[in-house]
Image (tube, rainbow, N blue to C red; front, top):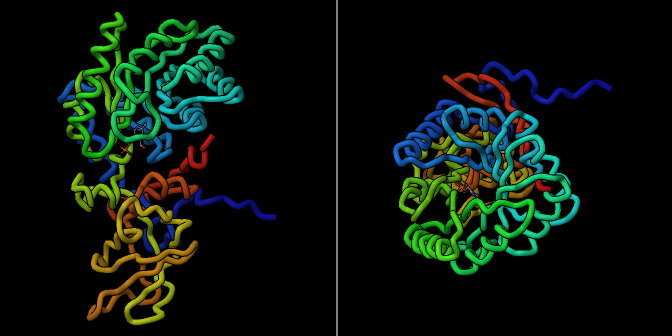
Length: 363
Ligand SMILES: Cc1ncc(COP(=O)(O)O)c(C=O)c1O
């Protein structure tokens, strides 16, 4: 049986790429990374980019080379891939629960600088037991729910109480506070964190790091009380959701799916060869599943797994069968997770192939 070499040698021209293909505009990536690093530098903030968006070690290295303090991963499996690729300073922003994962965490902490979060005494105690057994000390941040209502302690006083608990546990070092803020919530986040800092101070606890995150309010990151670092993820590519929120322009969107029109079943519809397995079915609060660059008035109104259903506005021609279109997805992070490879484009050419090495690392 012949070996299947998945896109090891990319075709030289964009036209020769078969579809659906995940493509990355490398000049835009570089511009997005630099803009954010310049902002962080100007405000004295450490940048710790979240790699959940790209999952590509080469881009993590580029972020560090431009000045990032380290990286952030959501899952242990992502962190293992990044450590294997030589990234040496990693924050895992996820409660690590269960013996199997705690053993992997200890193994990881032996080979690079790892820090993580906890939002309960149970999680902290699990971390402490694993670190004691391994003879290590793990820096831990208290995850705070400042309004996004995912994980996180619910009040500033609870944050200080958990900080004190972590401080008392062998194998752990209380490092600071971490939050993933709700979009548009900068003032509320700041007030919450200010209260938590005061509560920690009242208990005599030093807070070394205040870590916030996200791209939509990125340029207001410095307004959060006591903030020392920011964790943007999507900023590397941007996406349709960020354009909708006014956080960037279409020209800042670096990630797209190249698709081919395979059917024109009616004058007001076109079918492309990218469905939910390429674009994801994440609406992210928007109408439609993506933005067609060449036909901005068209809408991707429905998806099945391998078909994207486009509505062509009345009185317009729309694409012909065989024509290629470029789709900017609603949510870049989930799209990265669907593809093994991405093609890096520059100057109208395919420069190289990237393996999306941490895709699928959901454990
Ligand atoms: C904990 C955490 N930090 C940072 C980020 C990055 O956010 P964004 O993709 O908006 O930049 C995320 C994204 O989900 C996150 O969950």
